[in-house]
Length: 552
Image: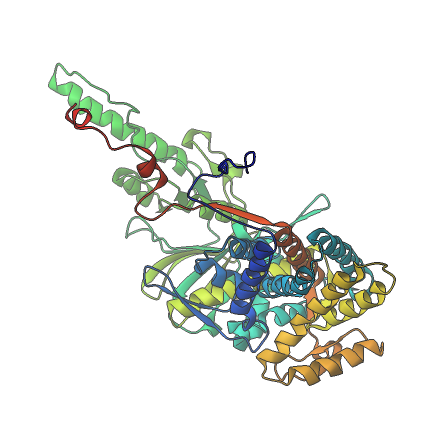
């Protein structure tokens, strides 16, 4: 940075760049992580509070889903932004545990603060954290987790229930659990030994305001927000033959501009006739296969409607691509691109009923009672839009939990029991570590206790007494399933309460939290090229244009 003695310092960074480095940055990052964790902390457990967020457009979101809250918050600090990213990662990977991952990551950073103040080098802390993470995963897999039989429906419902129990829809928990389990069972596909459960594509949540949440259900088929194109078409068909198209049932127009020159009047009528003949030909090709219902992703002209109606075919037009795929999976039809390529085997006969129903004040088309549907629609009813949105978010979590258990049927006890068990095992292991790195290693074990502590706090229980009692239970080695009862804040055995969580969710939570803490501790320099408002770097760098230049 500096030239030879006596000369002026050489500036490497441009004037308007701000640079912080060293301890200051590390401590700031820790503070930012803690601040974000504090926002979310009250949203953990069955006694969770809701947060109400206003967005700039004046809309409101009410939720206690960690990811949904952080999505709405705008954060200035760069370390805070990466904390928000991890909630999203958690949500995309396993769908549940977004709140606990933030709380845990914040605590991992908080316990590192004391070592930074004692001038311990970040790499030592990081090495200890890495070691601890590997040990945590091993302990989880080998000591704490138990296997689950995926055919035991009652047990599966119990696991999903402990996910739903911390959410807004916990009052209708039985209903929510059955919905989640049914939907996942419907969508599950086994393809030569590989299990595929695609919730995003094939389990659609359709929200209809009105009614109460108790009216929600899973349809064994698909529902779309459309009505038939012509009022005289049939609105209810049993055992329908369904045809799916993705082409226009109208006259093809030229791609670019086309000019036609006509010399005599008959030509004009002939051209019109040709158009009609073309549409009639398409309709005849369709009618030849005698379908009852026709779904197309594009438009249906009035003439085509007339022909189809005469043949007693109900047509539904402009269906979304995703909805069309769902119908195809539900009734076994194939989506066809051109009418002249239609064959008998493209027609879906798997559905038991096609009907148009008026729900609320809109018409919906239902293709239900399928024999072996591989796609389904979840019908959510609720008092208001906000209630529905929250119910949908909670249901997504429940669906993901159900999916995780199906894919990897291993469980760990919930209610902070697993954290205490892992914490105790890490404490034991830390005695075998030599040198300075045993302290950060032990700190990770302490940081895990934040989950049971927060659970107790949110119930308004006496945290210190409860945690001491819980620690005593675990240290005495009686069992690893003692945790906090999230309803009352007392310590309880999770085996009796039946609170279990999928192992995949827990492992992902630990991995994400520790990795993020490591990432943020690695940072020792923040260079921000901040522009002053209204006076950006460019406008200051460029000289004002001369008058001649302006005239030109």
